[in-house]
Length: 187
Picture 1: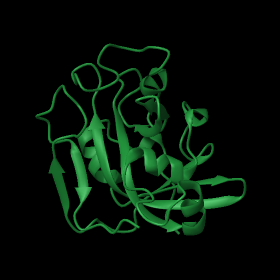
Picture 2: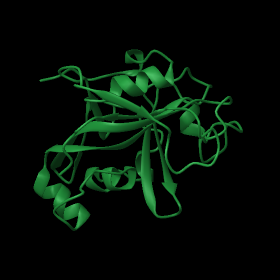
Picture 3: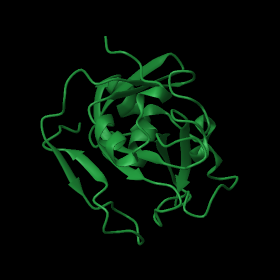
Picture 4: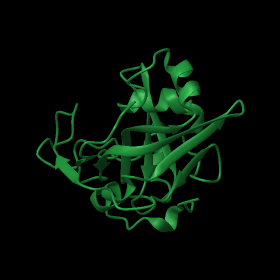
């Protein structure tokens, strides 16, 4: 059994913390069903100095969780359709967070399939990940391991981590702050 992470597990450097989250396990229990996913893809978003970040213009009602203490969960709706989950890793008030973009379902495969309505591509995108885990706006502002979302330390180092530009953004596109575990399986 791996140990749970807490806000003190993070360094405050969002790019470094993003890399460190690869291989960790995020899990939820909803209606008695456990789904656990090993994180294989993340993106780092800094605060005011990152034009692509939701925190770039300061706190708002929508992004207030992003300015919480490390370990706070920031959940938002993308394009009015998909829920996306971030973990705050920057200092309180700075707005630094890591977007959990995807991973491999380790436990609760049948539950994830039912929630997704399919048998493949269960958690290989931020919206798919949230759907598989049953994460919604209700979890915005919660704290890891003190609510419905559990985040567990990785058991070993990921084999190879690739850094690429972040996807789906139009500002600060040159930062190689998307991190992926190379050759990660994604059921």
